[in-house]
Image (cartoon, rainbow, N blue to C red; front, top):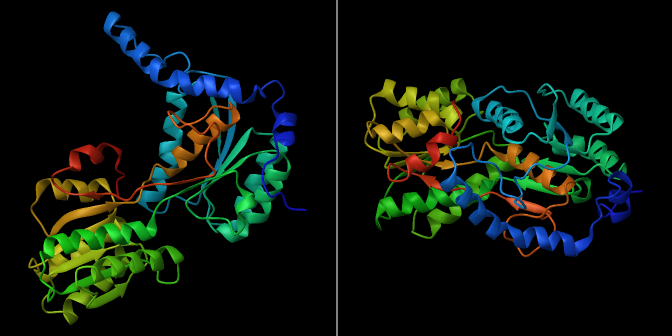
Amino acid sequence: MRLRTTSRRQQSRRYPGLVVGAVAVLALTACTGSAEDASNDEDSSSDAAPAAAAGSNDEEGDTVTIGFSAPAADHGWMAAITNNVRDLAEEYPDLDLQIAEGTNDVNLQISQVETFINDGVDAIVLLPFDGAAMTPVAMQAMEAGIPVINVDREFDDPNAARVTVLGDNYGMGVSAGQYVCEQAGGNEDAIVAEIAGIDSLPLTQDRSQGFEDALSECGLDVDARQAAEFTVESGEEVASNLLQAEPKIDFLWNHDDDQGVGVLAAIENAGRDEFVMVGGAGSANAMRSIQEDSGVLKATVIYPSTQGADGVKLARLLVQEKAMGDLVEVEVPRMVQLYAPVVTSENVDQFIDSAFES
């Protein structure tokens, strides 16, 4: 039998004594604003290391054991996912992180989650290699009363997770398309090219659809398109083919900054510099190029590599029965979708410190 939601009865069984009711949770939420003021007061009166203000969500609570599993770190974005999770151990002394070795083997990832269930962890944060294949074992965890936080790649049953944290692939395409429209300045004859990721993946299809929809708002469309495989090698190969086929380009959107390393190499080899390039995902490499303003890359669209860490933070709040900041809602939301902002030379300083290395 599949659960429709995580029942209160199950939560009570796993966390006796923590069912303090909505009144207590509301009190915690209401304390957030004033707690920040209190923290500021402390900072101004002492040179001691800042501590989380009483009543804030960062204040140390009961120890929470969280199992984390993600695919293998075979490119920069995925490596940053797990590294950002590891960094939380220093930030939150009440976190007991059980981090499984990254794997692209679905059967191994299933066994990792089964181990978390048998060990009785408080919550599981899971970025599946294959969302559909990991759905049954996530359901097992939920039925055992262990809340699951699904990150990035969705399960095929929403009841397999208490919380889902997603990037915005369609929004990435929209942001890239809107930036191109702004730069085109009404020129409906501008030639637009696109280098996508793996075409069979829904995330690639969503990014391309968002890009196409945004371009249509300013009378543009995609004149040339190639699909790579999110790798440096494939990016260089398809970019070389595209540049040979298109003697003039005005704008180029590349979906992924990891494969963008190869795309930029192909552009340099071809000696082309007549167009504006927009990247995707938001790597530190890309942002440094944007800062230097010395090449065709003028912007990138962020697909946050902090999703796993956000999932762990939400799991911690969930188990400690806290809410989210100043929201009126007294529970952690069921779904959080992260924004896909455009990074340019004007705002790159705001984002580069949290960027990942390709």
